Image (cartoon, rainbow, N blue to C red; front, top):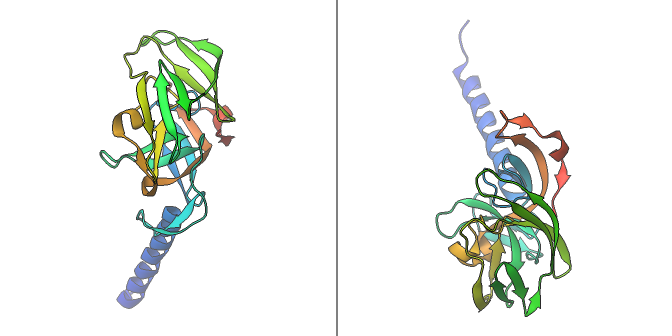
Length: 222
């Protein structure tokens, strides 16, 4: 039976168009982000796949950082996905200071506009590589979230006061002593923020043959 080349080409075009439409929607509306490191522990674990709401703050031209229209901006405490200004890598971090804020850190104690982000200890977890880690609850201007410090890791735990420029944000990892964040890559330009990480879609335990962590499926992030 002869092959109708015209029909085949037409079907290929339709298929490619469908892929383009789906990819564009994913780029502009919602996406997911794999988390390969523990920089956001205990909030986000290695092997989590987080859902990213790309409409949380604005609508961008698909596959670009060009904003079409905006209706909101990241707030202190938001978990955001962003492009690193150093190498373009997609990172997941928490916003701790917004434009105009004065921020300072003293021995892992965070001060925003002169106000201490109060911490209270919740638990102690052990690590074969780094010794004990302390899980804390941190109150960031009324937004409570969990964070972790590991005293035996060499880390940047203090920095002097600085004012966040207009259009920029200061981000930190919740794993405060083991995170590549604004202490190293600088403040983050607004256009580099992709969207807000809102939930864990699913999670695989990379240290245990990628066994699913069912208790983390569809867990909201805060």
